[in-house]
Every structure is written in structure tokens, then in C-alpha cells.
Length: 398
Image 1 (spheres, rainbow, N blue to C red):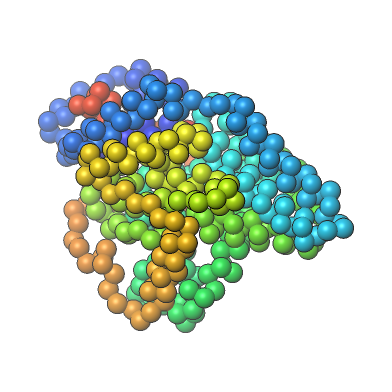
Image 2: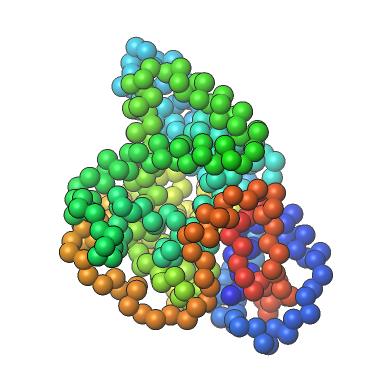
């Protein structure tokens, strides 16, 4: 499998420079088991063009304003927590949601400033381990909606995006389209628990200290504000992150793989028609643009959306954008459909060639590794597009 585009999408300039310093493997590319498709070649040219035009550069004035807004919500919410718990819960909940979007952006970003801001937003304010998050999230970026590979779509037994096997069904599945808002509200609770489990076994002392400081602040709040803010923040994140992919095609585990085509196939953008939804979606309304270019700052996505649409039309890719209301209705219908009587899933009916065989159990095994060991070691010689190619994909990025 050609992992060239996957590698370049997730890695820093420093990592790419290290790649180019590696000795070339004397491999006859004519005998490789993969071919670089015309769409993949066109995508590489598209990415190179955007990079040369400065779309991957950060504007630190904009970054400072975004960070200041997060601390405004959190600090004001903390000050009024005892006297106005309901307003405080809402303010801190929104602040945590926005901290999550920024932490997510900085987690993909490269350089010391992004690294430090990611730690502050993620570990301190949210109680999330960036090491745990990057392992899970980068797998999702490489293989979105890939059955038994993308852990983000596997939320059974509470949420089913496909019909389970007869012996694995649960009685409450038939109500999932009714109770899903409640399940979504516990997203931050789940991520906090998973982060604690990860950090206790990782030996990452810095994150332990930052998470401890964050919990000292959080546990100083009234209990009602703690509960209210974590549920509000979790719901506001979940309702956004689930809508872009759940409506789209689920890909078979061992189906054909092309990085750019998979992103177009499995991702739907959202059109926000007012300032409130534009702000609350935190850049995730441009999910396709983000999946194609994860390290790009989110404020460039509105312009890049127009360019991505033109690229899709020129290269026969699907480009899908729906309004907020339309995509919420589509998600409800998907959940209701999969709450019905069990029947065969379309993506499991087709026999596909075994292009790769990475399953969830293997993903979790990879999560136990230190981030210091996350360099890809299986990259081969230069591809026809001027990049080096990889025979297997590493979902662990630096």
C-alpha cells in the first residue's frame, strides 16, 4: 500500500527532512504491489501548490485571539461559579469545547509553540492526554470510516452505525436514535477516563503534572458546575465531531486504499449560516479540508474549501456540503435506520482484496508505545510524484 500521502499529511517538515536523509532502499518500483493513481498524483500537486502559497503558515495574532477567547470563558465561568452556577456551567462548557478545538488544531500543528499550547489546552484544561489522543486520532485520519480500523466509528454497544451480528445485539439498540444526545453528553467523561488510564501506564511525567494541575482547578468548582460543564462541553463536541462522517459510506476493512479518495468518500462538510454555529463548530465544519490537510491552521479552510471543490470537480471526487440542520437530520436518520431489525450491511457484502490488515486490536497495541518511537521505518524510494513512497502505512505521527 502506498502511504506517501498519509505520511506527508501528518508529519512535520523536520520528519520529512529526516526521511530524505535516509538511504534509499534498492527496490524496483515496477514490481511494487501498488500503483500511484492519477488522482493521487493530482492531489500531491494540489498539496504542493497550497504549501507554496502559504496556506500552512500560522498567523499568531489570530492564534492569540482564539486562545484569549477560551480563557475568557473559563476564567469568567470560574469567577461566577458559586453565585451563578447555571451560567458558569454554560460558559465553562463552551470554553472546554473551544479548548478542545484549539488543542486538536495544535495537536496536528508542528513546532514548539503548537506543542506547548496543545499541552495547555488538552492536558490542563480538558484533562486529556495528547499521547493517547494522537494515537487514536491519527489512525482515524489515515483510515476514516474504515470498519475495524477507525476506532472513532466503533461506539458499540451504545451507538451502532451498522447492524450487529445476531449474537452481539443489545436490547436498547432500538432506542439509540432517542437516547443518543444523552450518550453524546458523556463524551468528555469517557475521554477523561481513557486519558487517565493511558497516562498511568505511559510514564509521561509532564502530562501527569499538567493534568494534576488541571484537576486541582476543576475540582475546586461547585459540584453542579463540574457536572454541568463536563456534560455541556461533551455534548457540544460530540454533536459536531460525529456529524461529518456518520452520514457517509463505511468502508470494508480490507478494501482498496487511496488517501485522498478515502477522505472525499467518507467526509461531508457543513455550511454554517450564522456566527454562532460557525464559532461552535470550531473549524470542524471544514472537516474534509482538515482531513486532506491536517496540519493546516483552521482559519485557512474557508478559502481552501473553494479550491478543494474545484479539485474534486476536475478529478472526479465526491464533494459534499450540507447545512447544519440537514446534516443533523441525516445523522438522526442513520441512527434510526440502524436501530431497526438486523439485516446485512452493504459494506460487508462485497469481497475486497486484502490491501492491508490492520484491526482495532492492533491499533490498541500500538497505543502502548511511546511517542518517541513514532517514526515510520518502512518508507521506500521516491514515487513518480517526486515524494518517497511507503509500502506500509504508519498511523503514528510526530
